[in-house]
Length: 148
Image (cartoon, rainbow, N blue to C red; front, top):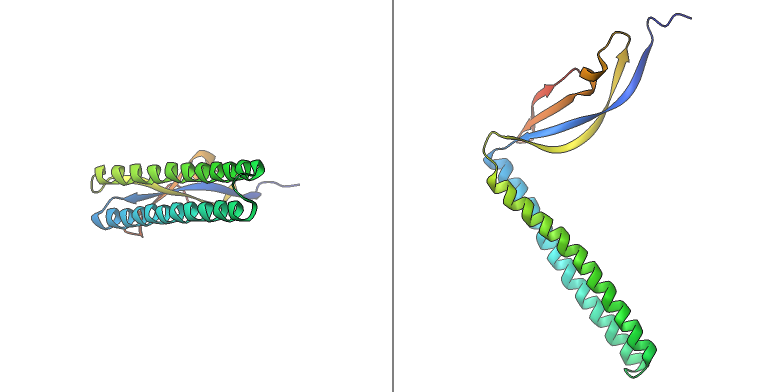
């Protein structure tokens, strides 16, 4: 069998980089601020739901019931755990907001990872074919680096 014309269709990671511009900074800042506000709202809703659930349980079964007390402690523990997770996420977003303010204009930053397919044939340099980047300026492709 002749393998001289054989080729493979493979998947590779593509790094998407953004060139920092004033517009990019503004858009990313707005997105992060929306995420922080959304987390704040979710934490408030979670707190209210937890209080309502605890009030409902104690109203139905009575406060003196030891099972009710254990149940309400479990609910409060779950609420506190979920709030702690949300606070951690919020802190990550706030750190990202600070980092964005420190970025200099025209600096390149990694924005995302994607995948694409490519054809590999005998004689190709696999390392070069795997190292591909897409560079964006305000959402528009400015450059494709590497062997497509």
